[in-house]
Image (cartoon, rainbow over all chains, first blue to last red):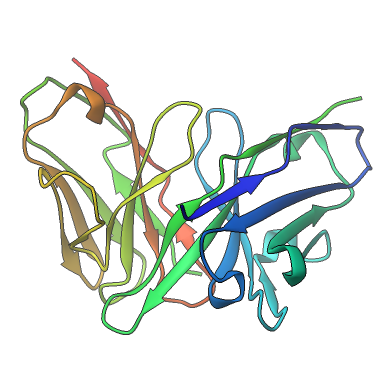
Length: 122
Length: 108
């Protein structure tokens, strides 16, 4: 079935980097943008950015510019999100989500990964 | 940036009630609005897209309406499994997407 499976939980020290993976299956990986969304404990959803797996083009929310990098490996249908210079405020669950688009209805995030907990603590 | 404001932020209701959640955009977004349901410890689940199109497999008691700057999500008859947090999302300004702050629906 169509799914996104993310890597496991991470614990990092302040100032370090983390790289989260998101493996797609059940569909053509290069046909749909992958977006990343995070959620701090007890808080709302925060959109971080997008990546086109076909071209590798990316776009990042201004808040994360300079700290986030989204990449992919098409041979294994996997997207990555790397966040650097981690601080305690980056402690959150990080989700990848597939952006589905059609001409009649436009876009939506129809498939989500299960989430990856990233804890930043000294 | 387009801002989304949901109301109310918290809603207490009973099984069988009809509830409505509102999402207002800071500028017009046509019908490029989606609604998601999130339960504790789970990823968000797409309920409605294009403001009023029900995602496959979602019960028909969920409905959405609106265009421009004002949108609503309605649950016609609350079921026990509907108690969750609901988020709206604007997808007008490709590819810069934002979410509302969420509405937590609790059992009265």
